[in-house]
Image (cartoon, rainbow, N blue to C red; front, side, top):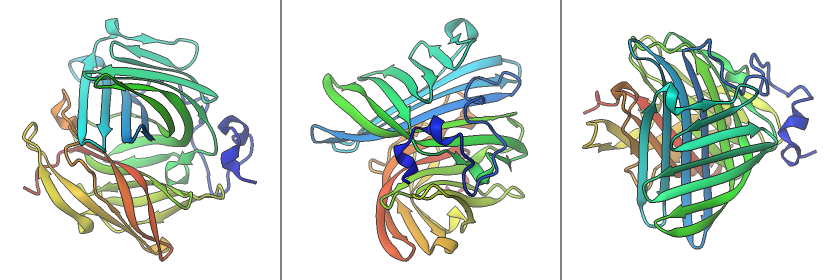
Length: 330
């Protein structure tokens, strides 16, 4: 049976091979106000009218020392065919935001997410672009580290991903209209944020051409090093493996004039247990989002994947996320 042909909500009724979840995909979708940070993240990638385009939409609810609770909306669009990119990060107060009290729904001035795994609606606007989409989730979730809960930078993080959200919709970009038909990735995360520690980590969401999907984490902050990947195999099995540190394969650094951050724009990841060497090289390189909070500047880059996996040549698509302080290489 190909689990990717079944609705996520149907698949959740059966225990998932290789997983030991400490989160509940359905119950934990809505906001959890007892935590210091709640995050909902959608990325997608499609081709229409000769253009290959990626989009990103991210809502966060954060308890910020002194400032109180803030609501952050992050959006970006990349046209890989023309080299166009625009991304922005906006912060709002409670008076600007509507939260659904009976389920999952968030509306901010520049966008909205709402619904269930069987029908997820979202839309956002930014200079030169508007996006509206509807997603239906299929297949199985990725529980990070098999459980969906792990330690990172003195934080106890909860995270799961839904990598197969069949999405249709429309995008208007520079007055041109495109039809969206994409396999969007929906990521859900919550934790009590540690604002005192150095915030710096890397994450890559990877679709491989053989049907395997990877969620890759790397943190090289001294005394907090972590390097691992959670693998959702095409047969529905969840697996976990250690990887070589990202810093062994980071090259082609790009200096952002906006933030003085110094990001690697070519990353090679080695997964020994999978006999895998995967290279990620964003094009265009300039896919940075300058945050209103300096410690949350980030590189959110859509890119193709090349390399070998199980000893054979392979391709795919990915989104790289580099969060926090990326200056010490300069």
